[in-house]
Length: 86
Image (cartoon, rainbow, N blue to C red; front, side, top):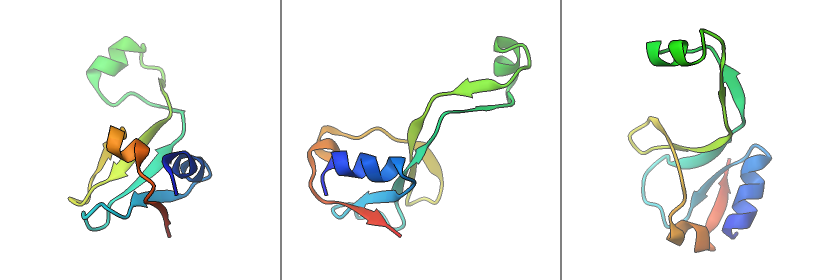
């Protein structure tokens, strides 16, 4: 599928990956907007101790078994080899 279809799958709660990626266990997923209690002193001061509003974003479960925010490269955005991961 193309990247537009991958985005629609992400927004419906699916995980997606490119066939061309060789990192074992990697996938992209959608994190909806939400608010969380501040966990750092910087954010506690910036938001007066109140919950911090976070915008929606895409996250990547990496081959190193951690999570990072993710933005597509031009190659990713133009690729036609996206697929849903179960």
